[in-house]
Image (cartoon, rainbow, N blue to C red; front, side, top):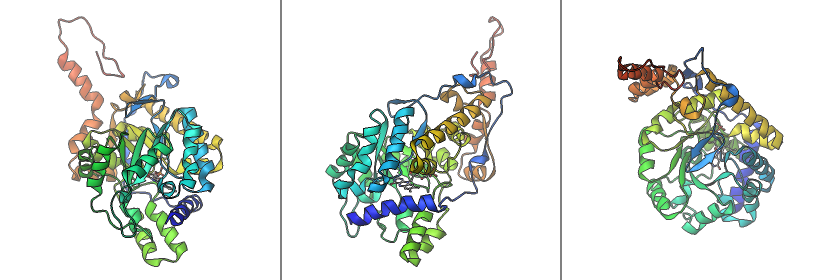
Length: 397
Ligand SMILES: Cc1cc2nc3c(=O)[nH]c(=O)nc-3n(C[C@H](O)[C@H](O)[C@H](O)COP(=O)(O)O)c2cc1C
């Protein structure tokens, strides 16, 4: 079992780097448009990107998504990611730690992150399927989960939800019954905040409420539109000669709730949200943040960069940050709370979906945030008061 898991870890990385496993969606980031501000009154060089996540102050709202570990050949990738996380003050997730829980000799591929990022917000990672009995193996014990957290002195634990990936995996765990109850129990037993993390199929409004009732501290909506774990498993199945799971992986390659939609749906639970899945530019990141995300997760671009060098990872970060700042300036936002108050117009397939799912009022409110603030200010205006001025950025008098 331990050998099988570690072999799978390196196959995932190699396939993701060698083949296109992305799954573009009809509903996409380009459906989210900012209302341009011709006189934005924001200095591009003074934009403040600091944010708070689970009680921690972060310099930037970017999460280097949980990607790898569990094989000696990925140590360098995790080292490059961790160095960048430390340098920029970003949150960083490690890949599933199952491999090292089963075989402690593999722990180095994870511990390398804390060694290189002593101050970063690090997120441990285990799978929801490992919290319940599966044919062939028992659920993790509490002690095993705690070992994963201690391995990297994690600030939080991500529990990934990946039923689609398991279904498309030749040796995948088939049981998903009881995961919510097991998650709820785990949350009560461990001393770190738990983040429920989808891996490419998204989180709906109802599932977000279920996760909230389980007591999780945050949700990574992990929506469709970026790396597809289903496509990844299809490629693995093909190389293993397993036609049945290969066909499942191909058929369900673009299954799921597109990321921008998942952000709006999951926001119903009023928990901190991470928007991961297909974020490729700083403009996508700005869209996710304006929709209500607290952090924006980026996976494949960091995996590719980290497989090359630390400098490449820094290049990706610098690119995203400078693109993000332009979107903020042009929408009149000098900081992230102002970005969350910027006007965004949701169109196309994203709008169609959200309207049918009952989010029409929310969409209208997002498109008229500034206008409604101005109207409110006008309503509050008393003519006998001294002359007033409406701040064009914040809308305050
Ligand atoms: C090669 C590879 C391995 C991954 N392994 C994990 C994992 O172990 N645990 C996890 O929670 N997510 C894992 N993911 C999912 C990512 O964290 C992220 O949700 C996904 O890549 C979507 O983001 P992207 O479109 O920016 O790549 C993996 C993704 C890739 C490409």
